[in-house]
Length: 189
Image (cartoon, rainbow, N blue to C red; front, side):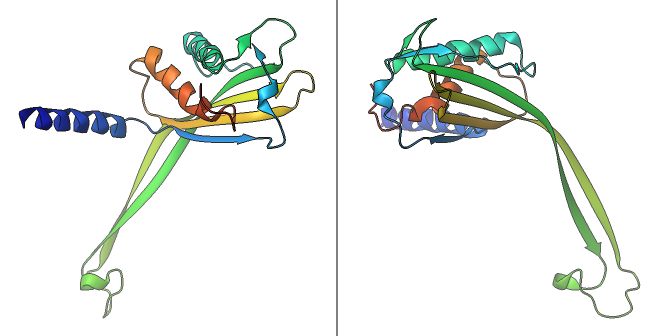
């Protein structure tokens, strides 16, 4: 009995810690006419628009995680004549959220802001809340090396409210979640 209670409490703590963290929203899309089984090798492709929005340490963590995911899926990394080009891109934007709350005082009861009478003694105050935050996206493009055609794209998006507490484990987890649907139509190895 005590063992079951301990397991339940431990499970609840794990779920609570996962639920309280920033949510990574993942979307994927791919060309449904492509046979992904014919691709065997990959190389990393860095576009001309390199991102300075994140540190070089985190950029290297993302690169290493993408390489590891591709290898875990059975692809071999090569420096020449690769079948696929994989391009991880990060985008960080400063965002502002504005919300307001109006409190009505005085006559009107539960039907506020509607009231009867002349309106004397009725006042209202509006509070505005401004929240500044960073919106971060990691986009992973998989491109056919010979045609330069985009075959698959995975996007992970999350509100960044603070620096990562353990980037060495959180970055690979995020890349794993984004790439979980790649390659489409092939059972996980």
